[in-house]
Image (cartoon, rainbow, N blue to C red; front, side, top):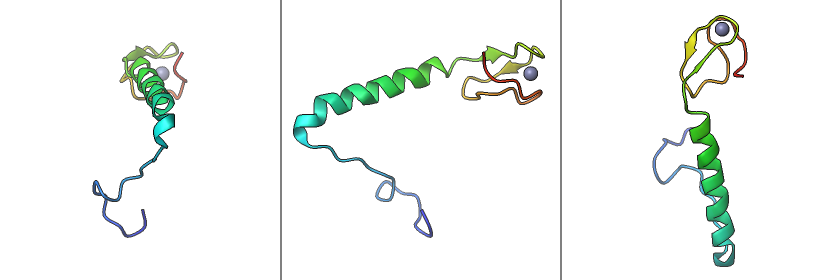
Length: 66
Ligand SMILES: [Zn+2]
């Protein structure tokens, strides 16, 4: 972003042709579904630490999400 402030006008955007809209919406929904799957909390299989869903590795021992 350089020196630009983060606002609604400076956030990245992807524009698609109208005929590609159904496919674009499908891809967005797929990406959101995957995000929700990984948003569930999990327990580290190595040390038993409870980890919040957005993390892919244990903060305590570094073991990856199962
Ligand atoms: Zn761990």
